[in-house]
Amino acid sequence: MSRKTLLWLVPVLLTLHNLEEAFLMPAFIEKRNASVQGAMRGVVPPVTYKQFLIALVIITVIPYLIALLWLGRRWAVYLLVGFQVVMLINVFAHTLMALFLHGYAPGLVTAILINLPFSLYLLKRAVGERWMSKRAVAWMFPIGLLIHGPALAGLMLLSGAIADMA
Image (cartoon, rainbow, N blue to C red; front, top):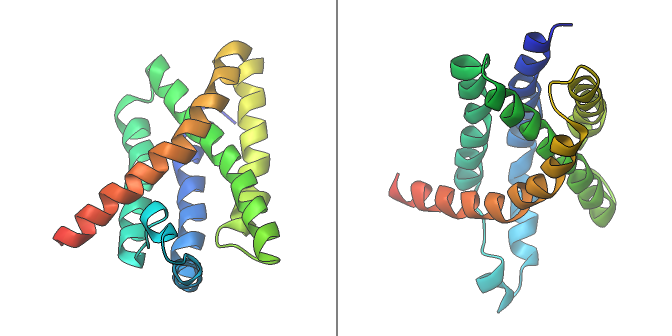
């Protein structure tokens, strides 16, 4: 499989994962919001399904734009591989959530069956074929944690503001 094809699979497989989340998230959001009590609501505000979908669309569109407009550029390769590193981190987030819930968490199936093996394969190819150095890939993990954590929380807040305006 060519590098171009592999990099195009990043947004395609992200879309599959996000579709699983989009279709199965409403009940989860309801449970999540109900479980946050009292003063904790200021720290962990409720999330609406509309807000969640807005964030999901933004997250889904960005790698398509990168692949469509700039795939031939070296920095675009870094960004797309970086997106996949975030998806690899997301595999562990889904797994931990499923363990915490003692069952299924929306996105778990595609995270484990698609994103985990694809992420490992893509990273192996990126380093093995010298698209990126081992050091660059290693740096993507702390950056990915920041994206999956604080940046995602910020995106949810932004999506809430967008949802309120609509």
